[in-house]
Length: 245
Image 1 (cartoon, rainbow, N blue to C red):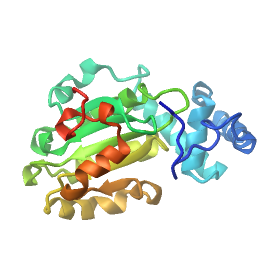
Image 2: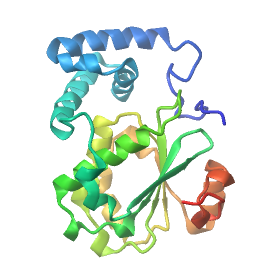
Image 3: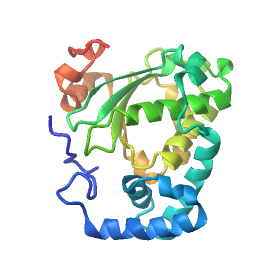
């Protein structure tokens, strides 16, 4: 399997031979600025800093502000360095996410089931912890040279009882603010018409780069779209592939 990204979401430097010298120079500049304000920046590797730079189009000032906000969040959200499964046991029990297989670009896949989420039964802080836990979990599955993951959001059976604008916006904010340049692509499938009203409310909170990564798939195109993106051996049986979840 070739783990190097070759599409429009190509990686600047890390997947390429030798890396991009100009990017590493910028990374060193960002490191100097950030470490002067928060010594915790020393613990972050160059790849992390590179992603914050790309997320802010290599603007050192904007990237350092974003990085410092991330470091402040990390101290509060993950005081022990990570979130344990025990801390989010109740959220895990809801079985809203499966993480298995890879797409054709070597990006680990997550399958998210929208109809298993009920805002009436969720504590927002607990949900945010769970979102960070899931993002950390999928990032541990990234192959060497790969920085992005992909996802399928399956909305079969989704209804008003599942609609959670606050939760969706909180999840987006965590991903965009603290896990920049991690998302490769998201396929939204089995989308009920009423979901589009919720989407219109969430859409303004998605940054422009991220908006391009969301792909709505019509039922008639579902099989071809998923098979084009994911090899049959890596595609779950539920979607016509051979992977047992």
